[in-house]
Length: 105
Image 1: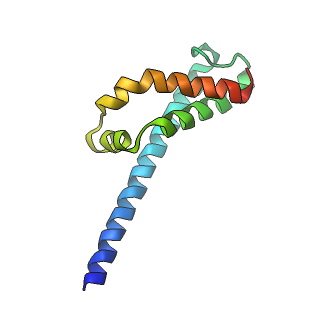
Image 2: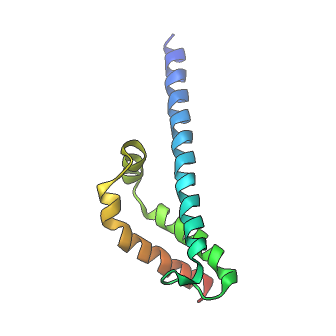
């Protein structure tokens, strides 16, 4: 019986994590699509149209990788995170700088 309860708890946790991952993937995709739609008019974006999508993908990945899991959990559970909003400018700046360097422009 304990094994069954433990298995259900684990399954519930794994399903919850998968659901959270899907929601975060959706946020990343929305960030990338918005960035691509602004193109080179976005501050700090490359002028070369061929670099826009790789730049946007990179920035989104780097930005979300810099966000602590606690802030992501808060965002996904409450729909907002005060700390996430407080640090968005510095994290986005660091993500853009890293991607500019990586893509060489």
